[in-house]
Image (cartoon, rainbow, N blue to C red; front, side):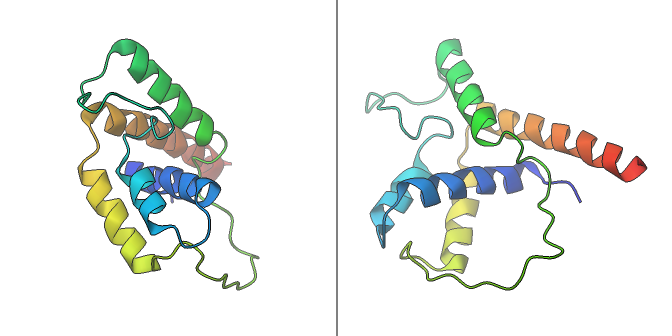
Length: 132
């Protein structure tokens, strides 16, 4: 089934965490998860909060879309063998899920709109694949 906007948010943030965080750096995980989607690597003024300017929102949209390019449809896990990797992030799977849910609830309307657009694109691709 197609991915929801929350699934795409989770996929986006998790990929950043795995890419940027070293072994057991829980503070780094929390920093990435709590950062504004699309601006995780951009230093902002401490008092700058949404709504952002059109220029910053365009930057956010482009970064999110680039990170999720070719990743808006479900993975084909049919033949993947079982694997269990060591937890090098310093947080459990369930704790990561709770943090993601909390962060998703705090995403600004523009960020949710970007993930919803991607979700809709994924739904369209999924429907085309199912019709074939």
